[in-house]
Image (cartoon, rainbow, N blue to C red; front, side, top):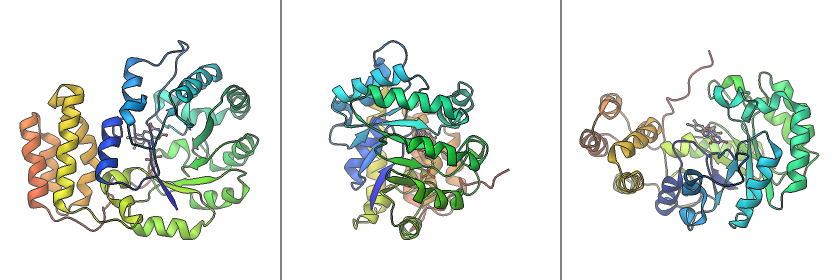
Length: 323
Ligand SMILES: Cc1cc2nc3c(=O)[nH]c(=O)nc-3n(C[C@H](O)[C@H](O)[C@H](O)COP(=O)(O)O)c2cc1C
């Protein structure tokens, strides 16, 4: 089985990807958080800081585009191909209100005819392999039959399916039955993504769907950064390695942002998941969340590594029942 690191905007930027790959090798690909190409056919300085090959040296990274404008996607995908990328991923799953309101991400799934025209122009204009990351629909999983028919008309390199609709956001259980029904209907290789947080979850998905080309992990891999290393037969990270990874990441982010306070804010996003690899974490979690200065943050993070029991697998409290 192949394992991919999911894109997570605000979390898995270039510094995170490089540091994770160095400390916890094993992921076959790291999908980059989306960039939104504009009508100006140029990557912005901010986009370049994430996607340039030198920012991803040694990391098998795949850039991702979020757009509903085919011309913008075509120039951006071709520019990324010129930078040396062999695959570009299209985001058809982002549930954020600001994105879907513009008919992008998961919002595009509500306009199958427009999506078809968009893919027609993108595949006609791009020289690079195009993969897609999708949800099942906007409101109703029944939308997916039509959406998959459209994807099947194009030479999609690989289709990653997160089996939720936009209105699920990341809550509730994944829509397993709909995924199972769609898989044999797909003409392209399919990667499964959603709620895999431990080795048992990954093994169960692989056993249930032997035809999968890959499994993509996001929050579970942020929580437990050696999870894929272990799935690949490598070692479980001990406390010392996790602490060394944390310190390297924090110091590199501080250097990147030129500001330890901004690095601290980024680290807090990571701790939202990673804290659940430690038991009895309520008090320490509160200290981390309420730290206001880099000094307070550093003391709170050091206390987690010093005091708390390290669990064998993350307890994913970030899953909330659907409302
Ligand atoms: C904070 C956050 C940021 C995300 N950013 C992106 C993104 O930039 N592109 C994308 O395709 N998916 C994005 N996702 C979705 C994840 O890639 C993934 O599909 C989702 O978390 C479900 O997988 P998981 O249960 O393994 O975490 C994001 C999710 C979260 C929680």
